[in-house]
Length: 358
Ligand code: ZN
Ligand code: ZN
Image 1 (tube, rainbow, N blue to C red):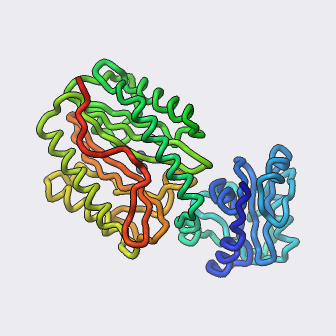
Image 2 (cartoon, rainbow, N blue to C red; image 1 turned 30 degrees about the horizontal axis):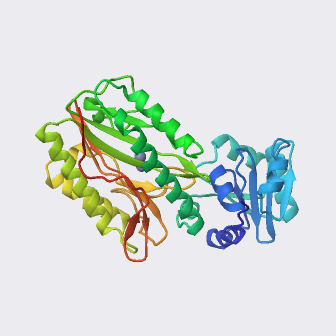
């Protein structure tokens, strides 16, 4: 599908006070002009835009890219600066957060001495934050696959099965159902490994009486799903049950509080204050959530330091957790869409406490 969001890029020129923008970050390039390959440059001025790539990708670019011009280069930074020179630009903005230091230096070296390179952070962070209907449809479909794959592999979550096998089964199911690629290395963390917020699946076997945290996702049309489920295998200790209930309440209340105009720091605080009041504040060490889109972690951020405000069309995760060293952990994560008057989950797996047969 050919995407043309050139008007978004030209609006950014004014907002950032530059006469050209150079995009090197593949998700931004895909978003703005549709190119799904991994190497290329999109350059934009008020007069028009140009997508530049090498011979490996020219054919692909001609069928995918909506840009006024498509150009092939031999040497990337010669190609880009050559085009910019023809446009007669002076102030050029680039992606401060993702452009490698060496790339920025090369751009500077190859450009004219009187050009001014402007590193941009905030305006580019919010470029992809509001999702349109087509993006929401892709995200919802990826979320639907999560639920379907989870249902399929659930009987595997039982004593004696190792975490890695469950992660592999999930990955296989998601691919077979039509998912493009796993969104990240899946977390399957059982028992005391549940205390590792990023406990990538290991060869540990599941035992009765443990909580198992599964964090996984796939991609549809480049858009990710991200969801975490924690289940009990047989009866678990009262303390694990207690932290489950607390995390679920934090998750539910944060979701209930999320609507346009509310600061995302405040949403983080809703969940964090509840967990702190329950006596487990020190065991919730990460932010409450993040944006999801062409990248599985993108702007905005829900955390104690966030200065973003919820806006209709944002897609974010709500994922509080409690991690007790040597004991176990709980995380519950949904991906939700901010609507006109609240939010609605895209992910579909029920999050009430679930005890699987041991
Ligand atoms: Zn996740
Ligand atoms: Zn997440």
